Every structure is written in C-alpha cells, then in structure tokens.
Length: 526
Image 1 (cartoon, rainbow, N blue to C red):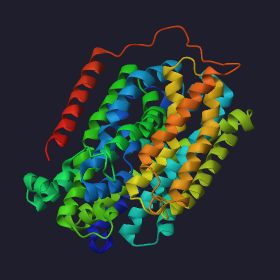
Image 2 (image 1 turned 180 degrees about the vertical axis):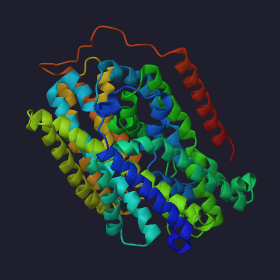
Image 3 (image 1 turned 120 degrees about the vertical axis):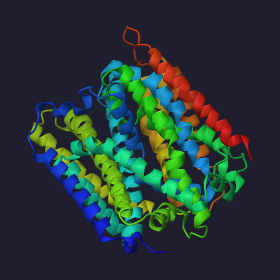
Image 4 (image 1 turned 90 degrees about the vertical axis):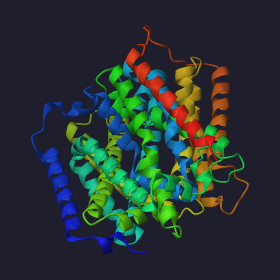
C-alpha cells in the first residue's frame, strides 16, 4: 500500500509546518505570556454559551479513533455504526433534563465532588481513583493508540516510535500549560474537521458516480441501521441493551464530557449546548461512515479495513489537501490527548493529593505534582497503547467500545441510582465502586487478553456482556441498600430544580422527531 508520504508535495509540507508553528506560538503565549487573574475561571467562570459547549463536547467525543473506526466499520458493514452516534440522543436528553440541572444546582467542579457531597469523602476518593483509571485507559491509551495507528500509516514507522512522537508533542503542551490555548482553538479545529471530511465525502460521491450510485453499489444491508438478532457483528439486542450502559457513563458522568456543561453561563445555555451536540451527531454518518462505504465501492480489496480513511485520503485528495488532512489529524489528536492529560492531573492533584496526601500543599507543590502526573500519564499511555495494539479478534471500533463497556457499568449503576432512587445508601455506592469495578474490569481483562473471543466462542456479544455486568451490579446495589443495617442516605436539599424553558423543549422535540424519522428511513427499505 502506498503511504501518504509518497504523495506529499512541497505545498503540503508548508501547510503542516505553518500549522505546527502557529500551535507552538499559541501554546508558548498561553504558557509564558502575561498570566491573567481569571485564568483559573476558564472552566468554572460560567461563561460558556451553547455553541461553544456543543462544539467542545463534540470535539472531546470525536477523536482520531472515530475517524478511523467509523470508516473501517462503514467499509466492512455499512451504516450500522451510526447507532453509536444516533442512539446517543436518548442519553444526551437524560444529561440535559435529569443530570445537568442537579450538577449545576450543586455548583460542583468535578464528578467525584458531586458524589462526595452526597455520600461523603470515602465515595469521593473512590470515584476520583476510578476517574483516573478511566481517563488513563479510555481517553489517553485508546486515543494514543488510534493516533499511533494513523502516524504509522502516514510515516510508515513502527508503532512504538509513532506513539512516542505523539505523546511528547501533546505532553509538551499539557506540561507547559499550553492547554488553555488548545481549548481556545477547539471550535476552529472542529469546523476544519467538518470541512475536510465533507470534501472527502463529496469527492468520493463524485468518483463513484453520484448519490444513487453510492446507494446501489453497496450491498442493500449496508444501509440498515438495525441488524437482525442473529447478526454476528451488531445484533439489535446488543445495541439496544448494551450501548446504554456505556452511554450513561460516557455522556452523563464522564468528567471530560460534562465539564463544558458545568461551565455553562446558565442552565438554559447548558441544555441548549447538549441539544446542539445531538444535532452535530447526525453529521457522523456523512462525515465519518459514508467515506468508509465509498472506499468499499472504490477500493474493494483492502487488506485491512482500518486503512479505509487513509486510503480515501491518499487516493482522492489533490496536493495541498493532504497537508490539511495531516493537520486536522494532528489537531484532533493533540486536543484529545492534551485535554485528557490535563483532566488527569487536575483530578489527581485536587481530589487525591490535596485532599488526602498533603492538605497544606502550596501552589508551587500543586503545580509540580500536576506536572509529575502528566509525565507519569504519558509513560503509562505508551505502555497501554502498545498492549492495545496486541488485542486480536476485534476491529478498532470494537476495541474502543468493548473497553468502554467494561469501564462503564459501575459508574452507570452508581449515578443512575443516586439520581433516581432516594433509598440508595453509601454502602451500596462504595461497594459497587470498589468490588464492582474490580469485577467488571477483571472480566474485561479476561475477555480482551486471556480468553479472547476469537478463540473461545462461549462469550456473548461484548455489548451484551457489558449489559449483564450492569444488571448484576444493579441488583447487588439495590439489595445492599435495602438490607443495609446502618443506612447512610443522601438527603435532598430543599428547593425545587429549575424547569427547562420553552425553547429547550421545542429544540429537543424537533431533534427527537428527526432522529425517529431517520431510524424509520434507514430501516424501512431493503
């Protein structure tokens, strides 16, 4: 396979060089320029409007992994991966109407703090550790692995080298404090990503011979969102039951996702922002999945479907645009890895070091610990990314979803129960966060590395497996709460939660109608 490197013209190198230079200048200015007093207020200064909340959440959500993974699934099975984006509207609605009002009313900065207010310090500490594991595995290691995969394809160098190059680049920003800068260019980077991906789709459709050719050249089942229960890859029960477990944990409780909502100007702006990401997610089909289907129609004999995105780029883009693609990929990567390193050091420094280890820490010490955490996170991510590279028997996308599926059940159980069931006790929450997590992650390790599904066929679909773990933990939590000899329960502060405004309802109802129509459309015809 020819790499994109052979196709690069001088103009491409100029574009990449200029971009990196701008990034470094912005990073340098943010790190060493005049320090403003209100910098610490960047997240909690409650200044974000709906557009920046929506773009920011979407930017956190669309990593390079998504570009690769969606094109790869589009290539091998069609639009079924669209479920992972479109079905999300249900859980975004949950975040918007149920969780966001409670988070904003509690005036918290982190998720561990929210649960700590309810059930005390022991719960806060456990959640902080869990959040750290989650950031290290699901954000850092997976993001880095996908990035390494791309760089390996672009530059044709082994995985360990490409991973180290990436981590040093992203880590440099997080270390020097240049992330404030990256947060500022996130909106710009997302718009750039939309433009580049849209161009790819348009050129591809033109090459195939128009929209109707796009529809007719692929097997008819490629255009079905809902696959039969007998389907090997994505049976509908697995998606219907298994996806929500990861989605609740991801959209409603994940620090990196919820952070933008916590920084909303007011509840309405926060709710409109969450609605906006629901609309943005509709774009995943034309932007990320259709290029994979086009690649299947134009280049049907790829040895590895994971190469679908880069194959399209290398073969269809004229000089100058290749440089832009590399820029977009670097941008998305540095953004994802950089911000996860940042949240890693925030949670560790604030929720663990300052609360538990050294309450009297000076500002200097906190900054030093934060930087050491960043360095440690980089090393850990390199080792994990190389381990993920050795998982066999699953495609890229399934690796991401299954890892999330093993991290998510304890979080979903704990947050859903604390919000929906007043009788949940501290004991139940703490047992699920400690023993429940060990149980869930243990099964995950066995599934991914020990008794892998490609050799042992007794496993259910990984999404159903995630749902079964969730169900077991839920039953345990309910029983523990009911039979707790000395129950410690959360008492709701008096005062009612604000109701969503008319504008919020109108936009949500429109989104729900559009989503249901899309589902009907993409399942009606064979």
